[in-house]
Image 1 (cartoon, one colour):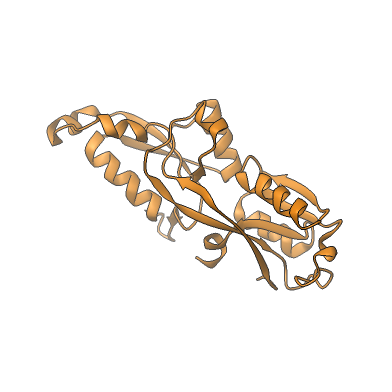
Image 2 (cartoon, rainbow, N blue to C red):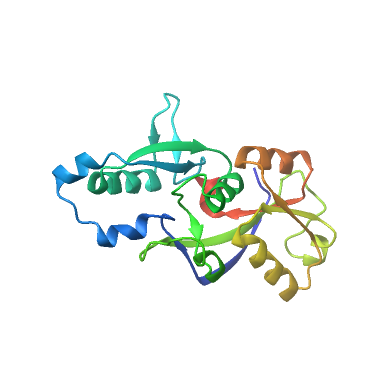
Length: 206
């Protein structure tokens, strides 16, 4: 679905696993019996991604899902999944409307209002995707990026990373922070509503 991609990697930026409440696991070592008695309902943000997938029968799976199930085995938590796009759920997490969310990058600013787990979920590389129908942009000539519309998830660290990359490479593009889900964002890319879309490699290769 893309003609090419340009990677801008920030190896020091670690994506931290499972926001909010997971850090409490360090202090929670309940017996199996106690875990069964807890019964606390935890609202979990769910967006389709390589970490959270739903099959045709509505069965959930994925790296983040499996991790959350392991946590529930210790804590006795019951999960209430709340679906939405990543930007929508991120705002809900900030507003306290959900309790737990995966694939959120650690920043000092976020750490002022959110709890992060002590162990990282992994590291990410970010790519600029372009529709194969777009003949105006040439990956070997960054000047063709000038004036183009670049979509990125609203509230994500990718926005800041792209600005740094663009400044370092003399690219003057219009950055558009989007609230749409992945499928809708890719539809906008294919229709030409945006010229480029910044997302992690796994989201489009999974």
